[in-house]
Image (spheres, rainbow, N blue to C red):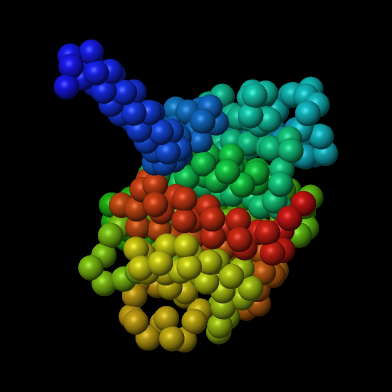
Length: 336
């Protein structure tokens, strides 16, 4: 074979090889992009992650801000989040126009922040009551807000252990170092704080909304990775609990066990009952006459208390599976 023909064959081989490599890159590109996509919540996630949650505060964490002015401002923002009301409460507004979000925040970081979606797709309210401690739920909420188009995120202010005074509500916890009543800074267990007042304002304004409250728990050798509850003292799952449980089991497959605080078969497995029965937001939305001290004995089918092993909340497979499951539930009954 002559040298010129060998060179031609080599050139052809190089061309073919280049084409194969290029096609492979095009095929692999989307898969790589999906595997490395941003699950931190974009600009909203960056703002939420940078938000301070003071670990020491005034003796009491009860509202030191003008609550009546907050009510007026909330009414205006909920009616039309694209318009900026005049502020006199001490809160301030921040906008993320590229993402369509309006942020209503306390500059002192002691009180909760509210993120409103100008173009929501689902009638969902995401709540993060323990932002300073359960940090994985912060990024998770931002991710879900962008992925699903929830109406709002209610983000707690100070750390749940910041205040030195105790809530009048029932229940105890050891999360602050020893078994004691809940602190007034614990947003999920204080009926007088602004977190609870904002919760009531939002759920009244959107009477068919579903509240999804995100929590993290310590790993345990005995127990599931996800525990679901309505927080009501009922036997058997209500609609949202059964719906999300089924969807999570489908999307997470065998990667994570998902159990309910109400299902008799699940309860036989003897897991830690982190069920939120003393959660004041759940008690209130279920119609308890005394959310501070009275358990709800019926479900409004509007509240999901989600406990998650903190080792999985930042895992891509879990975030994607949770988002898909929650969207499946929302698509069935909470589409706007």
